[in-house]
Length: 181
Image (cartoon, rainbow, N blue to C red):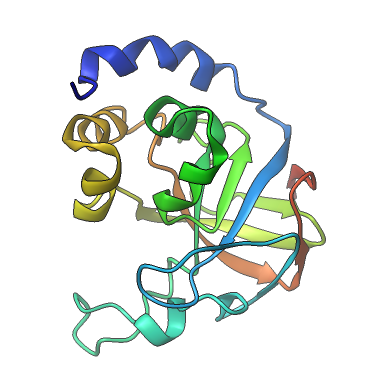
């Protein structure tokens, strides 16, 4: 039996308890090709490229008029708290979310309005205004109600955020995340 939206609601308290000012990177994932995932011990982040080795640029965006990658979505970042609710505690399943960075940090709109900069490892990323929502692939991997749940609390950004790389650097699991500026 699949989990329902009601089954996920008790996890909201855990999501809300995520650190607001200083957190950590839990998982770094590269998507070298469509449907492929590689969990990394370290990754380079570059402006205009996102996570080096990820297929963000090559994949492009079929919904854009020119087919080029969305410049506001170099990186996808998801809360470990929300992901644990839909994928369980088994971190092997976490990479299926499709986000490059899984973090122990409050990604809510109140905490991280667009333009907020975060030092993450030695890099600096910037939160964009582009919404990050659960898509068909997310529904297939975690269930329709999981996708509905992560999209139902827009202010908490359960599905995560889109970001750009403002300053190049390296990021690894365990690295600190802090607001800058």
